[in-house]
Amino acid sequence: MEHSFDVLVIGGGVVGNAIARELSRFHLKTAVLEKAPDVGLGTSCRNSGVLHSGINYQPGTLRAALAVRGNSMMDTICSELKVKIKRIGKLTTALDEDELPGLRQLMDQGTANGVPGLKILDCAAMQKIQPGVEGIAAIWSPTSAITSPYGLTIALADNACANGVSYFLRCEVCRIEKEGKKFTVRTRDGKKFAAGLVINSSGLASGRISAMGGVTEGNNGESLKIWPCRGEYYVLDKRLDGMLKTLIYPVPGTKDAGLGIHLTPTVDGNILIGPSANYLSDDMSEDYKVTASVLEELRRAGQSLLPNLKVSDFIRNFAGNRPKRTSPAEGGNEDFVIEEAREVKGFINLVGIESPGLTSAPAIAEMVRDLVSNHIPLREKEDFVAERPGFAAHFCELPIQEQERLIQEDPEYGEIICRCEKITKREIRDAIENPLGARTLVSIKYRARNGMGRCQGGFCTPRIVRMLRDEYGFEVEDYLYREAGSNLFVGNVREGEGK
Image (cartoon, rainbow, N blue to C red; front, side, top):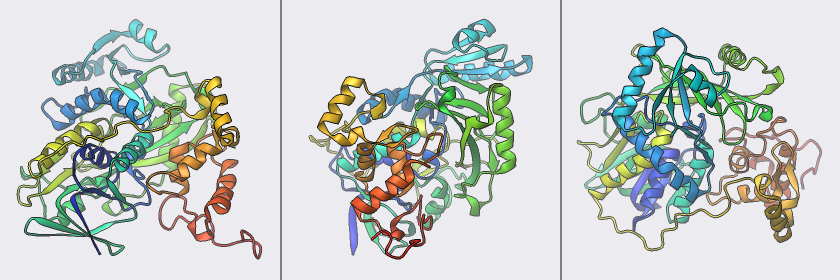
């Protein structure tokens, strides 16, 4: 059976979902193909959640223009989608005289890029923003912000789905053909899709998907090869919530693969240490393992920045891989590739969308929308719904009067499933019954935030497993942690258990 659409978006990361949501404003048949059992399980949800101001990118590049534009759109988008955002600003600090030229260069770049509110501060002014911060000078960028990367990615998908976009999870693209004006896209599970336009927003796989579509180089002759680069993080306990008032970054080197190891507060109260930057081989592009040596480096860096850190404050670690267009020998960063392939009309290519991809996502979506409009007249829907139902805060963060009202309406708000994060049974149920139908343990965790506290799921996981079994009919083989093959169980301990 062939599924027919006007537009196919390959990749359900934050950029793919932002594109899908933008296109859902119009009378189009749009679908998203995602190889994982849920959206955003790759790079999009494995980062620090920083919304960058735009000072770190060379003027005239897409990265610069899209970061500034995307940043300016985020308050409205996060309000509509009920996603947390905090405008806490950022200090980019020079530790000594040798780093001052790099600081001035960032200031010049940010000014040229139109970043609002930039100031160079002396040590005394820095201390007023963040007591105890080290350095002799800093750039203050007040538009820098933090959000939940997985919260935003999922919210964009939910809203796109609610506005008519079809989502096909567990659909890994293996072949793309074009005959006349139509593309045929085949997936490993045997599905077949037809569309007039294909949008390659597949992140780490974007180089391979380009080649499948018959596109071997960019319109300006640039290489579309992706070099995966791993960044590892430590997550610190909420005991430290409030210690960091703002983002604090070092002045990056010109050949650094990222922006350096730093401390990042999150919208939910944890602090992140990281990321590292280590290139991987091609066949490890989606290998998210952490490494002991890098974690030790992060631990030392964290304790040097926060001397009162305890061993017990390090509650989790994780890794995310950047889809870089620069090789290990080159270092540094190349610009985004966002274009319709000159030699393959109707194939819209997004390659090398690393940082600031999260920040740029809504602006990239506008750019892709305009490329789509070159092929299909876009007629706006009168019934497009921009707002996502629900509330941005977790139940435990609501005013007590609102909590009492909700418990009266639904007693499941009064039953705690996750003690560390104070997540209720109703919130778990809403996560299980999500619009996309994603039901891995991580899918539930990203939506409800269960399992993200100090005990890391020791209390809530058995209760969620029982809930899935008793109320949703899960069998042993249905329980996946994240993706195919990550089975939680292999059978029952006792005969008849679970029946």
